[in-house]
Image 1 (cartoon, helix red, strand yellow):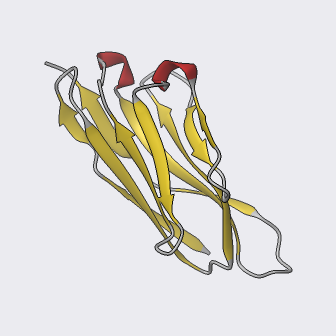
Image 2 (spheres, rainbow, N blue to C red):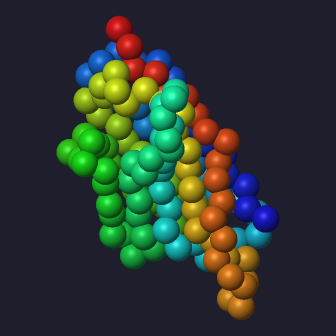
Length: 121
């Protein structure tokens, strides 16, 4: 089993910045892609950004140029630097990792508990 702990959410004014962190621990042999998703009230969960084990990144159009995803392989952590935040970025942000517990084991998706980001003046 893999546990994910997110931190860094909070209340910020429009135009401000926040940095989210997600730490993975537990039975980890390897981690493939890591990513951030978000879910606003009344809306479906959506992909924000992902990063592969090789460092390739993908961003939703709505956050391109404002958000940056990065990872620390040694610490099994993924980060989301969010700049120029807008009220429409308000949501619960979830971390997701694709991990396997042994070389022979299948890859599973694991989710964090979510961290609230509120952008408001």
